Length: 244
Image (tube, rainbow, N blue to C red; front, side, top):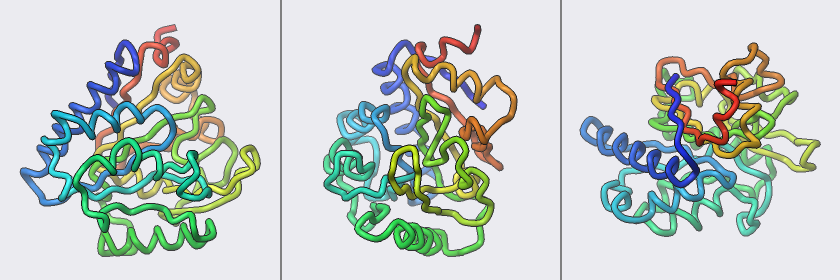
């Protein structure tokens, strides 16, 4: 596990934009595509806007990038809470990426149907319905102040899902259905990066990294790469309790 701490969300986003761009450039020296799982929420917005602007926009060959999502709220695309809409507004509408390489979780379907369709699209993309040793090139994850990541919330059975790559469920606390990748497919990624900002995340980050193993309470603890790299890019506010 690699931990990098930056002064604030601006410096954090700049550093991560450079890191991601360099990773994509390096990957294209070995292969002709790059699979990138985006995160929702507010924290990645500055990062997305940077990736969509110079010099990163020009350095990345977007025509070779495939975009996926880690999770989605079961709300229409037009809803501001929709993770895909946020990504289009802050990144995807600003770069030259083929539409058939943008793989959204289709919230016009029922949550169960959306999860099934996304599983099938992943089977097609990876050419197998058996979990491969390596899945995505990069998964970007956020973390909530309750320690959740993806739509793996404290106390939800989906935390322990062992078979499905994608699952849907009703989250009572939000009165909302969610669709999410599970730990299985994410943990087989080549690179997993948490982007975490804000003092409200400090306690959860401390527990996730330094506390006892309790993924039912701090679900981010289930993110353990099988063979890839795990990075935490955090700001000083979020890291404030790590040395306490």
